[in-house]
Image 1 (cartoon, chains in turn orange, purple):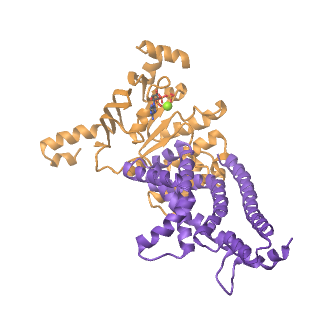
Image 2 (tube, rainbow over the protein chains, first blue to last red):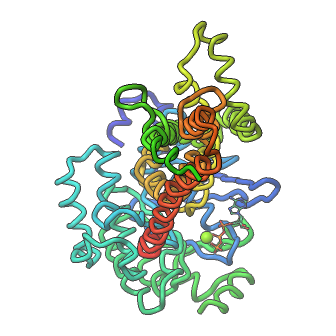
Length: 261
Length: 231
Ligand SMILES: Nc1ncnc2c1ncn2[C@@H]1O[C@H](COP(=O)(O)OP(=O)(O)OP(=O)(O)O)[C@@H](O)[C@H]1O
Ligand SMILES: [Mg+2]
């Protein structure tokens, strides 16, 4: 803010306005052919906030978070990260993705590489980090997610929960500023869900900015700052977890909550 | 029966007049097949990658190339290069070189299709995960997609190599001194043992292809095991 004082009033205003939100989704619309998958989505996420996105299957949750690191492109509207449009031609898309990590439902680990190499590949190739530095960071991260002893195994030799924790470590190795989670526990056996959620909770407590598509309501209650409910490409309901769980206003939210709780 | 004709000419069938004269016979055929598959691998990889590109100026030329070559008999390709080379280059190419180029061009179209199918068969999540960590398209291909896809393609490459080994017999038509031509020469010279001669070369082709095929089968089993573990 102080920097802005030296600028002209107009830029100052713009600068202030833009520096308000860390991540801002403005009027975002997207179509798959004729299918209107995202309808006028507006949402703001502050630094260190945890946003939980829930909603029925096909409502556009995955599409929305995938737009944030441009795995999907939007058709209308704007997404701003640290005050800058991510669609700006000057934005290096690979750099953007390095700063916004993503974790998928199906883990998507590289089956032909060891756990350690899964994690060090991007830091070495994208960040041009020396190999031993990348490896020591990878081992630290593996320790943090509780599977340091698996570093030299192949993904298929790990349980689902362990694989997902590797996937989280892989994303964290790029030192991202934001983490996107797309139903990270949906493909897991029930007894493995908690080990992944615990890692995510730790991350949230450490101040990571997170957008999580999840139906784990315990997780939402515990660490979410806000919850949004999407249905048919729209945000129908938004609020604190408390508001969301105790007195949702929309009929469809109530029906949805009844189904999953 | 005159098996002594076969016997006396066995080294001519196997290696031609080598080492006193030029290499020929089965060795020539195998060399052409190895050179052909090697060249076709790179050319096919190139066209296969172009073919799956989303950019029309890469995709359509590759498509046209693949379709034209796949729609042409190998014999035609061999003739074309043989008669076109002098017009295009201003001088004739040695027969073996001309045949080799034909094999490379012909096989590359099939390799391109193998490459395309192999890449498309990988789960989409692999590319997304790679791009999601900030690797660019080329890096994702180089480190994530191709290592997996190419490994899955190895059995198809071996099959392509087996058919090419058999197809080298077609080079006979432009006078390349490979096994089929060696057999014809010996037969024309001796005239008494066509059955023995052609039976022998059939067995020779069979042995080479059988060895390769069983190797390919074992490789397939080995890779299937790897895949089950690696997925
Ligand atoms: N690449 C695509 N092309 C066409 N339609 C798509 C594509 N991706 C998603 N869709 C459609 O868009 C809609 C929203 O998909 P999305 O994956 O965002 O839903 P979701 O809310 O994440 O659902 P789920 O809970 O099942 O993961 C779905 O109807 C889906 O069929
Ligand atoms: Mg989804």
